[in-house]
Length: 291
Ligand code: AHM
Ligand code: MG
View 1 (tube, rainbow, N blue to C red):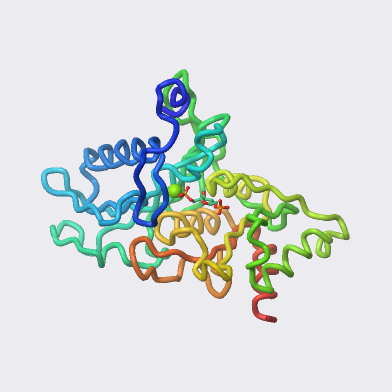
View 2 (view 1 turned 90 degrees about the vertical axis):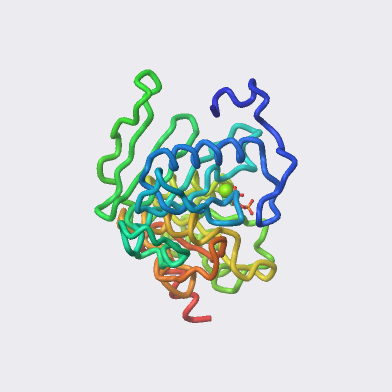
């Protein structure tokens, strides 16, 4: 769908907004329908949580299975109309009482440590899928001639250091002291023999995390004075990415604790996140402790 979107009149706004008050693009809504329908028809799911819908979707018989899928159908949607990489993020929980037919929000409101799988697809110069089931991370690339994802990154390992920082620096004036101190150290090369780090920020979490997984470095969306919980959503943005990064040997924190150990307050809850190379994230942790 994406490669043809511009020609098929699928770019631009849909004229509606989601539960977070964000304007929805036409492709946000198309992607949401495509994923909902495929997940329902898979017969494996009992509850779906999507960024685009306020309420959880309970799957009825005869399509009902035992898995909860939380997903952001099209992440980075501000980049759709200019052709920059966007993606789909998902996390999967197994229902607490599989086979019981009794499913509730208790199956969803759980820490990320209980996810059984997570991943994302990135639609860019190529389409990638990175996935974990809790035993490392594997990466696949779509072969358009076959219409199949082919394994290309069998064991993804995020380097323990990486001289790349990724953050929306337009918000710097509202950051906390630890984030400011870390970014200043990146620019001064304080922990890199005086050589400044590079800044890379796409504005699509999927693309920024994908680069971080492959090249190392750090991706941050902190809390700030205006947004005390940051911007990114716990269930279908922070948790899946935190699980992938940890499974690739990296680290993901909210600033004060391990990201995966947090408990969401609501299905669309938000949290700050710092993720990527272990030693970079540990520097932020140290600054947070000191301040
Ligand atoms: P979205 O789910 O509405 O697309 O918003 C999430 C996106 C992330 O992909 C990205 O990291 C972030 O928003 C960028 O936000 P900002 O424009 O504030 O830097
Ligand atoms: Mg999104």
